[in-house]
Length: 237
Image 1 (tube, rainbow, N blue to C red):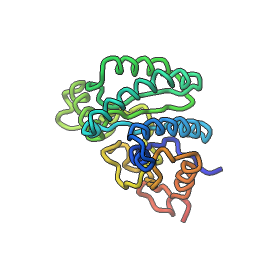
Image 2: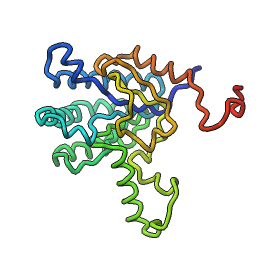
Image 3: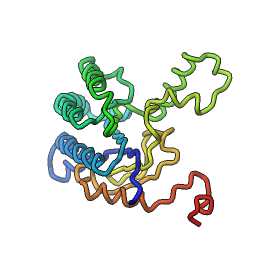
């Protein structure tokens, strides 16, 4: 049986362009994008993926038009209210990573409630990165580590820093997917993507259906992951 990635991370790009192509407001693309999230979550469960991480809102996205940012914050709240009970029923754990200090207190409270409700579920861990940046993640990890262990200011290693990163609870991603045609990682999981297989597609996120996801999985299954070793060392040469 082909190997299934244990952890898939996705930048969901192209919602606004999808709407523009259809002469719709950008917000309609974001609404349709939520439907795609639902489909991809189901497919990950069916395929046996254990961790799915989605980049929903970067720390740079605050620069977007104020009306769009306001809509996205409202959409987060709406999705939490509508979807969390379904996630829980399907044994899916929800985790949100990122700087919550700029979020409305009501939204932060809903995030906490969702995380508490689903914290013991084991079928799939769904992580949503919101107001997240990879550089922020590394800096906050260093600050938290040094607050807890001031003696490490004279030097520390990766193993000592790792528990303070936002995704300390998950293995590093095996497969990274970016939709929408851009070929960069845009400050997403900078530490965690060090050895991840990268997959880029021109498809816009609202069009990223099950068959498109299967193509990404097939591409991953054709890769040889050596982690610095040779094919001969892996017994494949």
